[in-house]
Length: 325
Figure 1 (cartoon, rainbow, N blue to C red):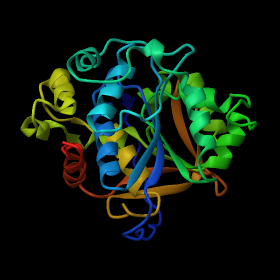
Figure 2 (figure 1 turned 180 degrees about the vertical axis):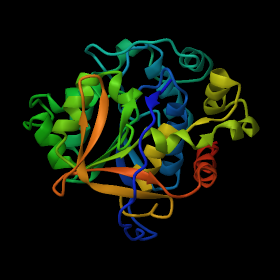
Figure 3 (figure 1 turned 45 degrees about the vertical axis):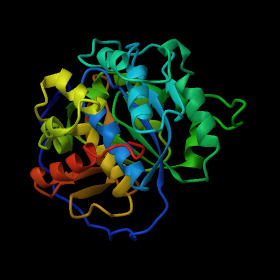
């Protein structure tokens, strides 16, 4: 469960124009802790729906937790949506391991290619290999869990994929990082405090612009109950059924995915304002504090559209069927 101390109210800044209707898909890497909460599954469904529509191209996915069923659950979703060949990596160092209400059942009930978590490659190696193949300043990183993998990527040395260090590789290849994490302008949120050292390091040392979708953004947006109308062959429906009986759940992770694909060029200016010009400090206990700074490369989303309308957009994507079925 994601918990935090409620953030303070903050005013919004300037809006930017909408993107052109026709543009190439946004290349993304999706990093998840698909384990304790089910909104990771909803976020993956949204991402695959955006890929179906030609808006996103999923370059790689990674798991930042140690639950052995999590990679298999993620692989189920990739396979279900016809993208079982997406490179998938798992964390190899120390990381959180907690029970999941749905991951094992999803892995046992639905087809997937990965046989076990042990068969998956090191996520840092996967990320480095796929980043090295991308055009410069093109890829959008999406994180919806602890920042363990991002910290490890930044600290990685050159390898066969690239002579560049992790920081250099990210700086060269990544356009922006969209992070579901934090509470704004200050607070304490699960994805940052659950591995506070990794969060502090990643946020401080990430060399490209970062946009945070804080706890307060997704907390008011209820989605998931609409999956009751979906066929039982859907692992997305099944995950929500196992988690809470197909009731609505907060949409924290889904907002980060939507913004990463549609928002960076201003396409969601009617949905959220964005507060720029600052840096986020992650403290030793995982709490966070916003500091205004004209040179700061961090930004965070601010509520604008009523939550029910945002939920409708997200749910329309959550229920999109695989292209091949």
